[in-house]
Length: 396
Image (cartoon, rainbow, N blue to C red; front, side):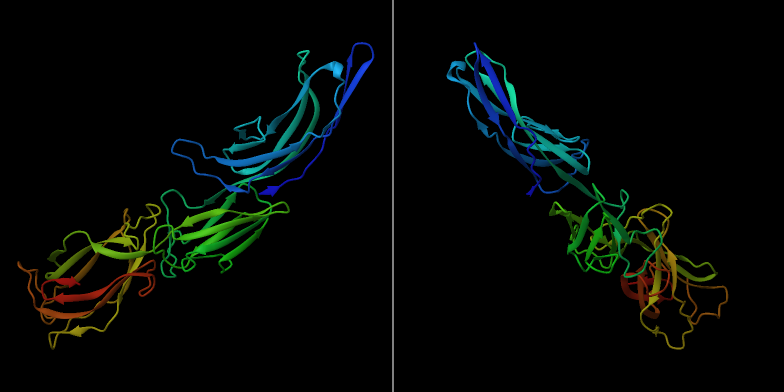
């Protein structure tokens, strides 16, 4: 709890006159102190409802009443009445010494409470008369931690590569105020993110934003947690945590049967393998925008192994290219051995047979990486062996 300042604003001397020259007096020197709950993170709303936060406020008061009217005035009584000014919020119990105040937006709010002391004469049916008032106030900070991810976007890591248009860093913003010290700490998932200063702790002086960059992939949804602590001259409290997930391309899966057909030249073949990309949490990789394709590259991981002796089949070079511009990203790996010259390839490649033949010519290691067009860079999603037969290709 954070106590706020106390003030004694009024003291009152009440004098009654009854009959001829009968005087009596009561003095009241009220005091009140108020406490406001620690800073809170704004709660997310239910669907269709506005966001809200509840700040608990409480007050304690002492009316300090001294003296009493003469007996001729009869019986009398006093009461305390509470009046809350929530600075745009809605007190739930405005006439009580403790109340939750509801706010619908983040911000810095001045909350004021008045303790009003009243007295009345019972026997004569007297009205309640204010004989003293004390006021206290304090500041409540209501925060909402938001990130700069657009709807449907994810935070990504590509093993150090940075493909354009894909989110590899974000800002976290403590919406509510820009003054004070904002202390951000990565409390879990330190292998996945760091702040812009290269550390897992960042202090913003009168700066409510922090840069978060991905440095690794999450093992589970929401396994990165970042704590915010807010400090001013009046208060030093933990505000709350936010959760993040860092996604990474991890698998590519054949989502339809391979296509085996004639090559682009008279002799030979083209085998087309159709892949779809998935992340490490088994979700389909979703493009951040229709025109933001994901670059990838094909990498040879071993030397070529010749199965047919005296063969002359050149191995193509490594290369990179983007995934198709659709959501989710898919791509085709084409294995082509084709020529118009009957003596160019030895042995001569054939059209695909039915059934396919089993005469293996050569093979080598093949890997696919995503996030860069440079072979060997990016997140590796597959490392298998590419086989070239006389009438078709295969990868397994």
